[in-house]
Image (spheres, rainbow, N blue to C red):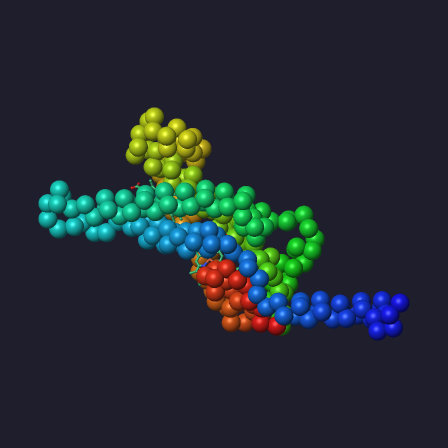
Length: 243
Ligand code: HEM
Ligand code: HEM
């Protein structure tokens, strides 16, 4: 046996040091794949367009001057609403497909580990951090647990609700026998009548607007005060850690 070869414990210590050094050098992890990032920004644009045009459908502009036949402003606003509505719906279908074929972070949007005690403890920790009660947030590669809760209930389920009620209203215009009416016509009697669906669809918009305001505030706040990159993560896909 050669006397120059290191003993087994010494070799293990050297290899441990290498592992630690390597772990410390990892500053960036690839989290959001391109389809998730593209979907995020297309979806944000679609929702912005839907909220603006939807607001004007609910509170139309005062009567336009001139011949009625020369004015099609509300027609354009409704057309833009429906086009953005289709984009939103097709986008969600594409995003669901990517949850199946993409990496495990692509699935975080669609479920919440509500039966794990540790999940709620982490969520409580993040709530205290956002309320300026605790001094240090957790460090997460994917979504933080509080963001995940909001994204599932206040974004995903609410968006599905908007799509279902939106297509039910669309089915009324497309008339009996249209695919929209055949697939979503049952929604109108469920709520009572057409005006009830309008009201709930309208209320859903304010729910989404609340989500967006809090979401954008949290993303920018975490970027500045948190322990990792946030906004640039949804652009480059990489989560970069500060400590
Ligand atoms: C983020 C998603 C959406 C938002 C914020 C939104 C918002 C709104 C609002 C505020 C209204 C006016 C309701 C009222 O006061 O009467 C409206 C109407 C309507 N929306 Fe949406 N909407 C969304 C998604 C959709 C989708 C996916 C569709 C399906 C194509 C859709 C189809 C319609 C239709 C057909 C109307 C009624 C138009 C009319 O009566 O002239 N919406 N929407
Ligand atoms: C209508 C507007 C918006 C909606 C509905 C929305 C919705 C969402 C959703 C659903 C996710 C989860 C993505 C996934 O897992 O697939 C997400 C993530 C994210 N959004 Fe938005 N978003 C909007 C606007 C914005 C804006 C304007 C910003 C930038 C200031 C932003 C920054 C981010 C970031 C940084 C993430 C990743 C969070 C993380 O790092 O864990 N979002 N957003």
